Length: 310
Ligand code: R2B
Ligand code: URA
Image 1 (cartoon, rainbow, N blue to C red):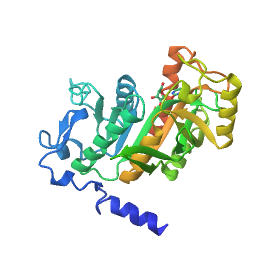
Image 2 (image 1 turned 90 degrees about the horizontal axis):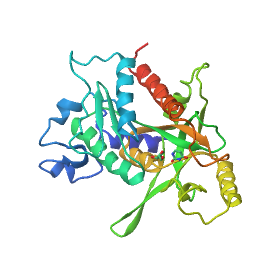
Image 3 (image 1 turned 45 degrees about the vertical axis):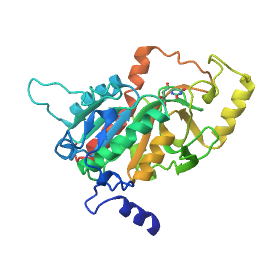
């Protein structure tokens, strides 16, 4: 709609660089991105990052380092002879960060608070560096609802554990609500990159984002459990009927902050199990590691296509 377009225009400068919805930042002498161990005073962020077009994040430092090497191979990016990829945020000990040409890779840790802090600083980084129209991807793992392990889910939107489609955050003693909207076109384009001979299916649906892995996701195998298996299954069937196809722990915040910043975002997760059939993640490690490459394959195809690579 016209309204939506106008809103998007207000999020960006005419050249596609992000505007920040915070009047304080531009008035500060310098901005320290504390958890990234970077700063606008200590680093030339524009020189370092202005070419970034894709920001890819996932839970663990190791997986994101692997993705950095994988995408380097896929886009044919060459490191200077004798060098290796550097964890740019190694001094923070919080998140890891790798840059491969136009692709910036981060680990975001587990859960909404962790990914939220990272997103604040990455969005500011995009602003300081004057990156144009960056696209954010979360490459993750999840529990499938009615989908067997080893398949992909692309979130069309995110809901919380009460099926509410927004992120709630207490701010100055009041509940702030931000809609957890994701880019439908981007989700659709990603789904279409599945190939006939891929070893996984791709489902687009709603993602339930929870504050806990065990009781928060209705598991029976946590340290505590005050409900029965019937209660659990009734809940999973109820949310499945509302088109919730997976559960994880970051999408609500990722969607809400990307949307609020005017950044296109997508969440692509591989299912580790079908929650209708169990709770424990019992698949062998080697198989899980293989599965975790599936989101990377789809996102790499998108990036290559967007860069005009074969
Ligand atoms: C998926 O996997 C993690 C929990 O095991 C969590 O970060 C998530 O969203
Ligand atoms: N991550 C989750 O949050 N839940 C699962 O069931 C699997 C991975």
